[in-house]
Amino acid sequence: MKQLERGGTSASAVAPPLPATTVAQLDTLIQKAIQDKNLPGVMVGVWIPAQGEYQVAFGAANLNTGQARQVTDSFRIASITKTFTATAILQLADQGLLSTQDLLAQWFPDFPHADLITVQDLLRMRSGLAEFADESVLNGYYHRPLEPFTAQDALRLAAARAASFTPPQQKTVYTNTNFVLLQQIVERVSGQDINSYLQTHVMEPLRLRHTFYATDPVLPGPLHGYSFDARTESFRDMTQLNPQVPGGAGAVVSTLDDLHPYMRALYAGTLLQPATQVERLRGEQIEGAPPFVQYGEGLMHIGPFCGHNGTIFGFSSDAFYLPSQDAVIVVNVNRLDQDDQSHSTQLFLKVTKLLFPQEVPW
Image (cartoon, rainbow, N blue to C red; front, top):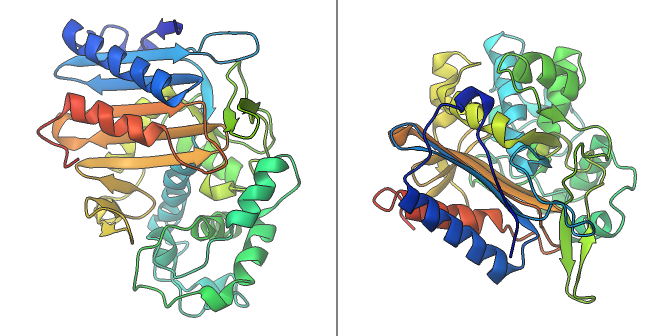
């Protein structure tokens, strides 16, 4: 039987739990996913002010020792990082230090198509740029996760694929290259490295005490991330890896306790001017995705939910806000394989279907 750990945040310790029937249904759903998908561990947080909250960690944090997952575990949030990087860019725009209509050529004059691509195109995944992290890069990252890599390496790889670029503002195609460029723009405009900027201008104002932009391979705390190797039929420990590979597209580490208030602040635009937030929330359908999946400016809409998901070897996460219920849902699984197929998104869709059957289109 998998181990279970429940808990509540210090800020919401007096909040009631969800109804017992709902708790039992969620427990069963999560345990079934662990068994069916062979997941080392799962953590889920649900906060619905009108109904109650639910925070649970099932399974193992460390497969070697059998140590149980805890709701306080720090984990890599991968592409949820994009919400932080985009907030930084939009703050700089609010301050008049840049415009979202500025051309990429202002900072990268020699980058292919830089005289056609705007900052907004990067934010909205409408730049037409190629993905630097193609199959060969991901394969190298999987087998050599600690190998040195920088943002400059990412941009060099993307620029080398200029022949596959498409004109900007035609399609919404999700690529990490956009946010590595945005990371670099934040640093050049602010005069701070991205981790210092985010800590000062995002994490501290929102009191995200356990959230940071990782600059070294170590993940604090006892939680390990794993990839299942079908050839050896065993799990490979992927806890330590170079966070500079995803960089501004995926280097942030956080906790359940921090993502809860952060998702509300992200939707509310707490750190931005109102007009900026209105434009940020405007979504456009992602190429090849179902019609209910759209992208705004560094955030994602899945049906009525607003937030982001993320995958990085060892971890997959989903963190979303549901405006109609003022609800936050966070799911983390400490498994992501070489195929980069998220287990947390599958579970997020099932959890939300159980909790909000009248609201979801899936």
